[in-house]
Image 1 (cartoon, rainbow, N blue to C red):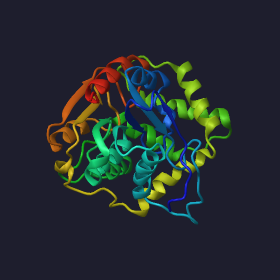
Image 2 (cartoon, rainbow, N blue to C red):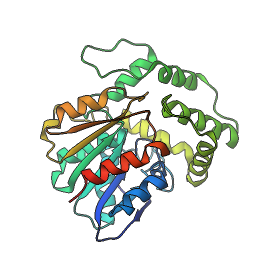
Image 3 (cartoon, helix red, strand yellow):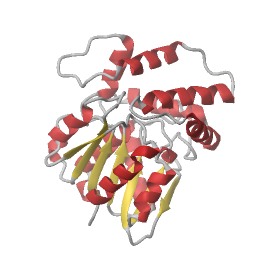
Image 4 (cartoon, rainbow, N blue to C red):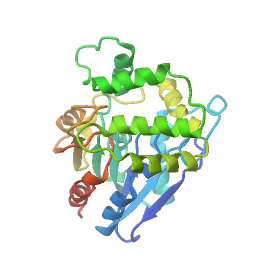
Length: 292
């Protein structure tokens, strides 16, 4: 399944070094905050962000009629680069987007100038299975990645048992509650800003329910991630984790250990989102990492 339109936009001069921003699963590209994107472009980068298939303004599909896997979501990375005329780019990735970036760096090293992964898990680590076992109360096999924080597990257990939201306001309230959880406890949470963001996400989505197709894609090919390949990554790699990461605590150190020469950066107070308080620090680190 390849013929899905992918929405993207770019900032900065075409002559600047390109950064492709890859957001996590079920997430729109605008979760890369405008201010953060602006800092990167003001620093002399051509910045591109996009909506994954079945999110935001990108195309949506009837999964039963047009099934796909995470291989297709990964290949969309190359499609976006092709659409913008890029033979290669610096990849800056968040959460499950980091799995896509790591996979691309192994599979198509000539297309990845550098790799930055934020709040992600090591490729091949089976983090999706770790989260599911945690939610189901099942024991983790020896050698598994660290589990999410207890508050993460409690939140999603309640969400799984709750009835669907009745209307737009209830849906947005639920999205704000999820953002509050992922934000973590290390920095103040701006509920007004969160409401503006979630209203924007709700209103620009072609079909907000289509994001569930990303879960179906994962179930369609559970062994999507190659195992034991991160030592093959040649791209200079920066691995970033917040000190208050609730979803994938400690995973970044494992990535940094497995990729030769990778650098680990811990951002004080940050959870699993990208709040304004960390934009300057993140942008400065990424601009330095992508300097050519």
